[in-house]
Length: 128
Length: 187
Image (tube, rainbow over all chains, first blue to last red; front, side, top):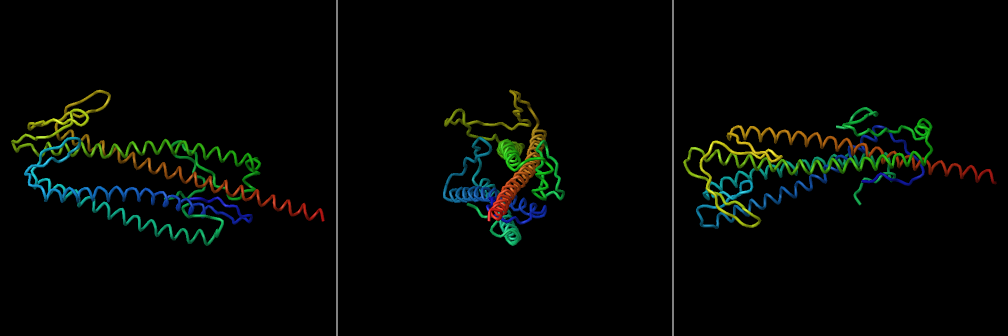
């Protein structure tokens, strides 16, 4: 985010404006963090999905299930329930993150309207 | 969210940036000319960058620590759930990079936790869970504080950047005015 400007005429910047700019900066930072978190959540969701599918195909009764650093020998049906539980958790987490992203984007759009209305071309709120 | 007063002073040793209402008043009050004001602010920005790097490193450490503790909790609860079944827990574990061996873990009431500094202590499963849970909460709480610190810091960076841009613009504006009056005199 950039606020550098080269215009000659000065629009007065109030503390309220500054707070809006700060808020926009915070939202923008959070937005980028969220993108990362969503990517990670999607990945773990896919991994669990794959693991679940593999489990259906296998005919082994006991599978090695990673807990911490070790692979425990766990009966297949128990692993199935554990994976289901984990999947539920990551899906919920993903939904929460997606919702936060929507809310952040709409707040950013609001602030953009306010700030562009006041400063026009003197402010740049777009990514490079 | 954002603090309501213009004079947010400091947070955990990070000095607050002063919001400038009016550039001209700011320069006369601080007794600085445009160039020294700008270089003072640039120096401040540089200092903020250093602190930001430090905080980000701390954040990364904590973010790695939290899943670690969760893993430990997971293992302890697995051991606990095996208790009373009479079966041993069979597990494959890594003895060296890429080499695995098989272990049979008999039913047990206790686990040993690595406390750091070459110290390992035996706990009952309940105590171990309580201790790990407490560590997890502490780590989460510190992460929250750290994120708040980072937000405060970034606000100060934003304020300073805006101030730099405004002083610069004000200076350009002043030069233009002087040029215009100078040109008028020459006529």
